Length: 81
Image (cartoon, rainbow, N blue to C red):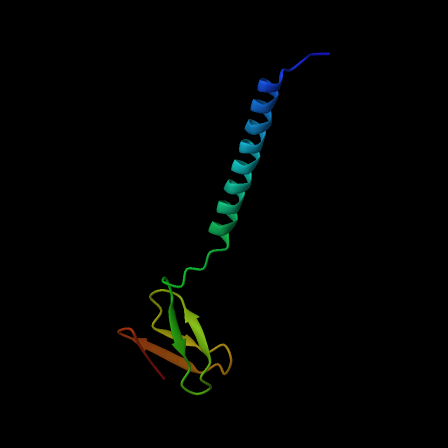
C-alpha cells in the first residue's frame, strides 16, 4: 500500500474538484448553446384573421398561418394580412 501525506492528499482532492467543476461547466455551456433561442434571426408575425402570433424564418416574405392556414405577407419589416 502507498502512503500520501496531507499536503499531497489535499492537492489531489482540490484538483479533482476543479476537474469535476470544469466538466460540469463545459457540459452546461454545451447544453445552453444547443437549447438557446435565436429570436433575433426570425420575425414575429401576427395573423390578420385569427390574431395568432408565430415566428417566421429569416428572409420569408409569405407564409401560411399555422392555426387558420391563411396567407400572411411580410414587406419591409411590416406585417400585414
